[in-house]
Image 1: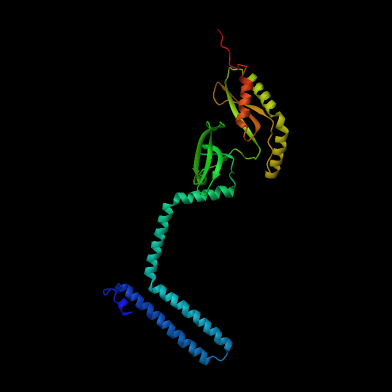
Image 2: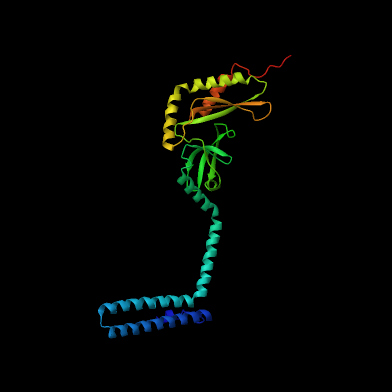
Length: 285
């Protein structure tokens, strides 16, 4: 025992302010213990009623405990304030260092809570567009679809999108129903071209392609509209005219299609309409 004490450094000392705080703490605790003991002894000797005696003992005990806490707070106030500032500084540094990770977790919670999309849905966030194949707490993985915002071909590239993007950017879900979607594509013409004949041919081809499943789509959309409280849109194929610039006519085809067959039905209609017919204006000799 004496040998172990020999290893205590001889020059071990505490700063003056720390020593003063420890002495003040010891005196405070000693004073409260003495006062509590004297008060309890006085109550036990002079209060005859057991119920009143018990109530006074409990009240004085809690009062002295509160007095001790207040006294310690006054004695150690500066040190507690310094410690709190250090903790706040560490917390701020931690938040700044992990801001992106916190945003990714927030984005995951946001998209899950809002039900923005599920696995297999085709989504677009900023310039990223593709089919969702994986979701984690930090990122969402999609298989890119293109080219551009109107193409439906797999490009062969995989894109990992950090979930932080879902906090600040809107998400476009192109697969808002489980089985059927509306598909649109545009065919441009010049004003002098035979766009009226092309319009009729596109509408006829779209009707032929959609005829086998049009009734099923109509029932599905009616059910979807009732469940969501929405007005059911017309599911019949249509071709509308747009004039984005002078001298141009754009024919926009809208038709229902299965989720995974939009590109196939678009190419089928275009091939059928333009395979044997030239709708461009003939130049005179």
